[in-house]
Image (cartoon, rainbow, N blue to C red; front, side, top):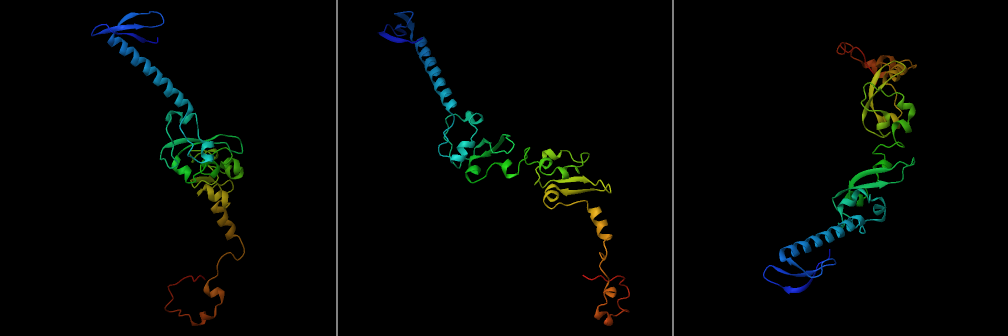
Length: 232
């Protein structure tokens, strides 16, 4: 209802108003002011809602950051002007996943401006395309599901988490970083030790066995307590 004043004060507490349905009706001043304030409040709420739908002003950010800005999730910021080095935590979306999965993460605007990019594409956050199960299915077969709380799908192939691995040959269980197994292709240390021991000439000779010339000057009396002399 739109109220329009059409007369001067009738007395100290009322004046004549008209609207669309009641031309020239007498209304108390307090009621009129309350109606005007309510109408102004409704208009302010409508303007605020419209600004929220438009979202924050991100025109000062880099084009890449504007493209990865999560408009829907960050709409609660209203009409705030987002500065490039703001410490505000906001949500970002990256669409560069090779498998088409959405990469969604939270980071400060300042960190993004300084070059911190999508953690999934960088391999620091796990996604279906960079998990150990995807990139190294052979190593994932050695996963100890009994001792490890999570699965190979929950870690990237470059994770520094130490995990337990059971050997299917000697049944020895050992711990190693996931990234070491992936990048260095490390295997069961017990099997590796056994292989080295069975290799010809794998054991280092003693000084005496090496036939070194300075053994002619060896003091056997003073060195009697030394049992084995290995070549360093």
